[in-house]
Amino acid sequence: MLKAIVSSALLGAALFATPAAAEFALDVYTGYQTSPHSRVSGDHPDGGTYDALIGWEGRSFEMPPYYGLRGTWWRDDTLGYALEYTHAKVYAPDGEKAAIGFDRMELTDGLNLLTFNVMRRWPNQWGKLTPYVGGGLGVAFPHVDVTSAGGERTFGYQLTGPAARLIAGASYEISDRFSVFGEYQFTASQNNADLEGGGSMETRIFTNALNVGVGFSF
Image (cartoon, rainbow, N blue to C red; front, side, top):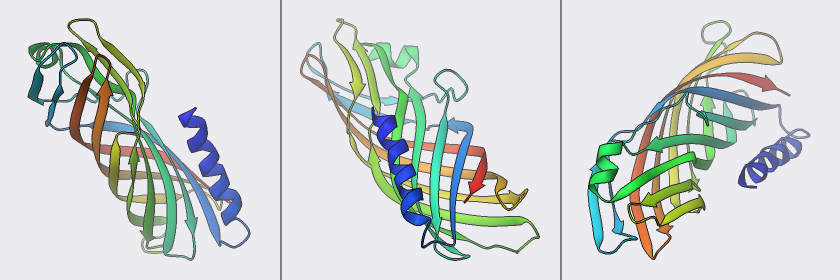
C-alpha cells in the first residue's frame, strides 16, 4: 500500500507540473548500495536493554533489490523540484545480531525513504552530458523485520523518523525524451521502531550508493 501511495504521489506531481513547467522528468535507477556501522539500541523484547555497533550489509542485488524513482519538475533550464522514493536495504550480520539476542534484524522491504528535493543542473556544459546536484528532506518508513531469540517477531511497515539525501551525478541525452545517468547518492535516516513484546529499536542509518538509471522527459 505504501508503494502505491508513492507511485500515486509521483504521478500526481507529473500531472500538476505538465501544464506550467518547461519539463517534467521521471528517473528510474538501481545500483550498488552500502551502509556503514551504526549503533542500535533499545528495550529488548525478551527483557532488558541492548546497545551494539552493527556493521550493516546492503546486499543490493539480492531480492528484493535496491532501486529508486525520482520525479523532477524542472522550472527552467537549471532549477527543479523533485519527489524521490528509494527502496534501500540493511541487514545485521549473523554474529552481531546473535550477540545482542536477535535471530533476525533487517530493514529489507525496504529501508524506504521519501524526500522532497531541490535540484540544480548545468545543461550544455559538455555537449549532451549534463551534470547535476540535489538535496532533500523527508521521512523514513521502513519495513521492520526483527525476530528476537525468544521468538517475538516484528514484521511490518512503520513511520520511524526523518530522512535526508544528497545527490551528485550527470545525465547523457540520447534523444529529446530519453537519457541515461550515473550518480552518487548519500542518505541519512533516523529509525525509531516499535518491536513486538514491548521492545524498541533505535538506530541512525547512513547509506552510500552508486546509481545508474534511465530518465524520461515529458
